[in-house]
Picture (cartoon, rainbow, N blue to C red):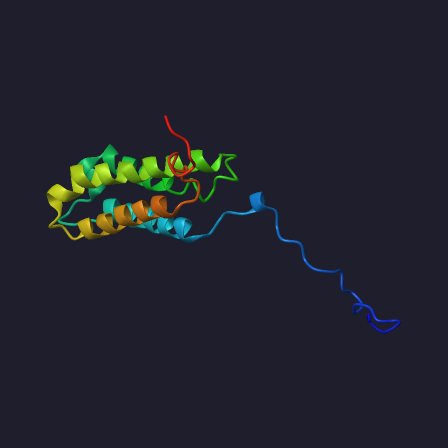
Length: 148
């Protein structure tokens, strides 16, 4: 039994809307959110003045390194726009997170008593979370049945 004769969609109905192509927008998943938090927190940590100086004056180019490392954690979210494979974008994001951890150990930890150190710590933790949650992590060879 089908629809009655003369039944059809309402005027102007063009059918279901097709989803947007996967490469047409930035993925705004949790990884992208954490990466954005990382960039903002690190930029604030190195730019806010405390005791008459900021990170740019205290650590110079390393402040730029920290911001660059935080931006790298965005790679998995913008991989389609950069024409990167998922695994490569994930590796770039992890490299950014590793750079943030190195920055934290070298420059934030020794001055952990400063207020801006909290913002830097939030930025590093957010960058690590972005890398952890990013798509493209290589599969475990042992789980796939591959052995050396």
